Image (cartoon, rainbow, N blue to C red):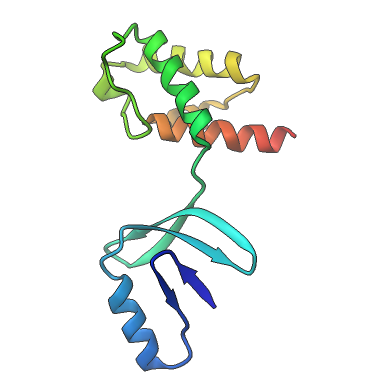
Length: 138
């Protein structure tokens, strides 16, 4: 049995499968608990309706990354920075992004590989990567 936040889905026959697919077809993001393992968020790819599981970082990590981004980009206190904020939209160029990554490495005591650094586009991407690296380090 898989449970999706907002509705519970048990797939035992094709009729129930179709009903379940119709119920979740308009979902874009949800949480999933399966066999005692919780996944923070699942994004459904609208083209294929296949779930992509992502682990959302803790709010404290996201807030810390927001502070570092604001500091590195010398943004005013009024500038809103959230997990969804894209570095490019905040005015960061490639050099700024490298400096942000260096600041994150120093703050969190991690080392970010070049390939991983190039995949960071948003504050949430950075926070997720940080938590992943910290968990691997432990």
